Structure formats: structure tokens, C-alpha cells
Image (cartoon, rainbow, N blue to C red; front, side):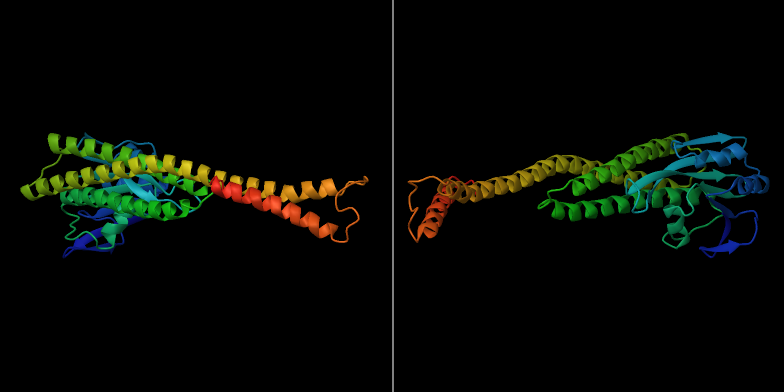
Length: 312
């Protein structure tokens, strides 16, 4: 889907068609839409297609007055997916007259935040400033998603204390996998932005340089938070694997003791139930009750023994 935006008074306004100084957002574009953007902006079709590759790395490329920047962004997957969070490339392309963003998602979270007004003083004419604002919001989005993962870890931890199943443990492993993707994407973004700062691929004023420094700080904070969360998850998964095993052992121990205690009356009644002469209480009218007392007495003694040995 193609959408055209133009900033008026610091607020984004949707346009019906392309005009110089606008921002073209291509969300999950079709080949026809990419060809249309190429005709309107003069961008190479290959440049527009690179961000649609899910395995594309964070980088920038400049040729013939056209600038392509690709960065990794985080997004939340549907509940039925194998992992809760993943990363996807977002392409930012500059021409002399406009800025273009391309992503394979129908709605990229970073673009959504900018369009919803979470980023102030957006100007589509100031392409470099808009790019840095997208960088900053992307780092903040990673921080938000890492915090959400930490909350989910806390919720799973409460369930794991009394769990005898592997479902919660598998959920932890899925979150850990998402954090690995986050760390990989964040480190790639950091390397790309360090090159942007070092090579000065576009003109930056003093305020823009300060903004880029803020981006690098936020990105580094996101890397540290993701690393800490990943380390905690790794140690927690091992610890709770032992907890689950111990919980299962406790259940098996209780079942084993119960089986022994139930087997004692069966064993005693089996002895007295043999059809042979000379058995004790054979002719006593209270024979049944006496046998039951003997069986329950032995079972009680063994139960007390188990209790003192801390088996129960």
C-alpha cells in the first residue's frame, strides 16, 4: 500500500498523489506499486526491493545521488506464531526531492508511532532529520518490546513454581529466541549508525549530530537490556528445568508411598484369606475386624516411619 504524507506546521497530512517534498511510505508494496514509486521518485527498482528481503542486513548504500539506508526494526508476531517477537528490515531512501520508506509489513511499528504523533516536529522536507527521528524511535521501540518480554518472563516465572509440564519452559525458550534476534538486529543497527556518524553520509547540523548521539545511546541501552534479559532467561530456563524435574519427582514419590501403604492391607488380607486350616482367627466371629486392625496397624507404623525419615 502506498501512502503520501506532507508535513504542515509540524503535523503530517495525507496527500492523494506524489509531490516534491513529500514522504512516500510503501507498506507491503506490490510489484506494481514499487514500479509506480520508481517512476515518481526516480529511485532504482533494485533499491526499492532490497528492504523487502527478510534477511537483508543493516547497511547504507549511496549511488548517483540516491541514498539507501536499511535498519532492523522489531515487531510483535501473532499469538499462534512460534516466537512472540521478531525483526524486519525497514528501508529509508533519499532522493533530491523526497524521502521513501519501504517495509514488507503492512504496518511497521516505527512508522505507526511516527504517524500517530509520538514523534514531535516531523518535517518531510528535512529528510536527514526525519531519518534520525526514525532511528531514535526504532531504538525506543526495541526498549519497549524488551520491557514487554521482561513482563512476560515474570508472569511465566509465577506459573513455573508449581508447574509439572514443559509448556512454561518452552515459552521461556521462545522469548529467549526473540531476544537473540533483538540483539543481532540492535548490534547491526549500531554498526550501521556508527558508520553514518563516521562517514557523514548526509549533511548534519549541530542539532542533528546531538540527535544521532542520542540514538546511539538509546540503541546501546537497548542492547544492554536485551543482553541482561537474555542472560537471565538462560539461567532461569536451567533453574526451572530442575524445578519441574523436582516437582515431578515429588509427585512420583507421593504415588510410590501411597502404593506401598495401600499394598500392605492387601498383603495382610491375602495371607488371612488363604483357604487352609490353622489360620489365626479362623473361627472367631471378630476375625475380619481383627485382620483389618492388624493390616491398618502395620500400614500406620510404616507411614510413621516414612514421615520420620522425611520421605513424606
